Amino acid sequence: MSKLTPESWLVSAGRPEQPGDPMNEPLVPASNFTLGGDRIYTRDTGAPGWESLETIVGGLEGGEAIAYSSGMAAAAAVFDQLSAGARIILPDDCYHGVSELARSGEAKGLWQLGRLAVDDTEGWVKACADGDLLWLESPSNPLLSVADLKTICAAPRKPDSIMVVDNTFATPLNQQPLQLGADIAMHSATKFIGGHSDLLAGVLVTNQPALVPGLRKSRVIKGATPGALEVFLAVRGLRTLALRLAKAQESAARLACWLESQDWVERVRYPGLESHSTHEIAAGQLGGFGGMISFDVVGGARAADALCHNVQLIRHATSLGSVESTMERRGAVPGQEHLPESLIRLSVGIESCADLLTDLEQAVAQSKVV
Ligand SMILES: *Cc1c(COP(=O)(O)O)cnc(C)c1O
View 1 (cartoon, helix red, strand yellow):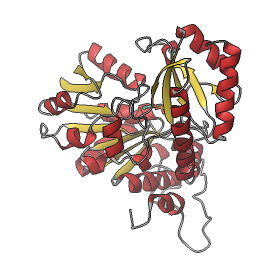
View 2 (view 1 turned 120 degrees about the vertical axis):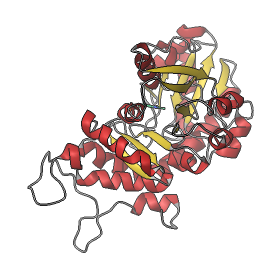
View 3 (view 1 turned 45 degrees about the vertical axis):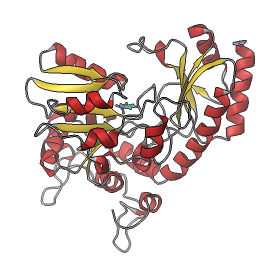
């Protein structure tokens, strides 16, 4: 990236540049192109908008970006790079789709799988010696634990091993894993990058040139190609990422403090709170504490379900990182039963913080949780 601040880069990068060009890379719904130019077939050679998305995210993270059809498609492309029998280490708290991907490969005998707590820095440093794929996610989904990436990413590693950080929760504005020593930063662009709950997309960014051909090839042969409309919308979302994130994390900080003061709340997990178990690492490592809060309510699953059903402005929905606030009881999601049963994950949007607070207050009153 040039000397522009990330805010200005988000607005200005990835635009057509010739006089008379449109301000935005046009949406080109084409599977194939007339032969004789650089593009042949979209799955192989891409569509024009892909490069805008890749330029913007790659510039922020400091590497070469490759766009995929979803965050999971991006994750699967990384797993495709492993040799038979590889040793994979995953965090104990991690996006459930990635867990499932790793577990299903393990069940087929493709690789061995180990797990470490997100905050077990010593364990991760040791695992670097013999792990082939070190998959980190920080802050983690949904417990919001922060890994000591500075220490882990700087640890001596087995040659040809791959260190990945799922950077979806932090966004490329709050954290740049490649600058800390990771090989790949991964994003579900479905979340904060798109920011409007209207697309699925994923991005990998790497500063290891040796990884690029394999990651691109996986996209081609598995058909993990992002759609033209999705890419157009993701680029449009990126233009306002800095504003959306700033608003979301300002409100999240206020809501987290308020939640902590409520007697119907058992525990609040937000990296910006001093009470958070990994607050000190978060403060030294993240540019901002993000827009995600997890909190456990008094009264178990029933109380949490009631609260989720009674919010009005906040939408009772899964997913995260959008302009509208959403919340759900994560333990109700199949495969997530290991979580505290009353844990609610709240994705803070860009509404007025006062209105969000009022909404939670009225939902509590309706639910009679106290
Ligand atoms: C949503 C999510 C994913 C998966 O991305 P999709 O776009 O849904 O495929 C991966 N990691 C994290 C942290 C996520 O929140």
